[in-house]
Image (cartoon, rainbow, N blue to C red):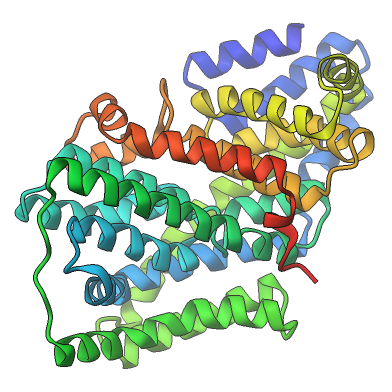
Length: 421
């Protein structure tokens, strides 16, 4: 109880979540009256990041930096315009389709929103779209980042759950495509209701030139996902090859990347990766505390009294995680929830850990778009000047269909595991 109170108080006064987790561990040791636990504390902290799979995180982040600085993201947007730009609400489709392409490389919701909001929102405003809707749509497009591979959250989950990183990345493919399809359906319906403008039609020649100009950008996700699916490389090796491909494309195809930019990009990628990896290290300490305090056993006893079968368990987990996700960012929420809920899911209800991981990640990402925090909305607001609360109301249909997909994924595990060999 003292540990929980300390954690909540620290979080409420604005202490970063990683430090909250570490300090809560120290409070627990002091309250336990067993100072010998301090000898184990640094080992748990180091052990949390002593994993080969975590090397993929800085590499994925670096790919995003290179894409943005090398003009690759802009060419992906142009290619998306060639496919769907002439439809009613064409720029809204372009926004999501470009997000889908970019998410297959970035793997981070907040990074994706920050990049795409700068590109798409001003363009949509010029064509007559409401800025609040454009910013909110971009925030929902960021949901695709942690679901379609590669995904920082899937890498973190893989380390926490001790499952293959490659399996988790593959498990996100079908759910990511389904979510994109659901969002397209919402745009189609809203386009007719609100009479969204049609985009400019392109001639066949223009479309061919635009697509050919953007095709090299797709080499990056093809290299990453293709090498994993074919078994030629694991997730970390695929991320390294993808980073090299991004640099070569930005330097020699788009010619907007110079080698003098790389030190700055490496520094930014290193800083962001350090934040994520520190959270993972802090999570190891927090998980150790939970196990030592027998929290998973107590949680399992309560959940078993409420949920009688795997489906009811998954629906209960959805409610719990949605509440967690509304106040805590994705990776910290993952770190707090997985050590408690995963053993119950696998040992009590026999749920595949990869299926469980997909549901957990989708749920926590949806929390990034839910009040009172809605971190993705705040990122979009910082870039565009739109109001976060109004964004949520204007884009409420997207939230509803995302919740529907979450329930579908919870009931049908094959949607997550069908592509895993």
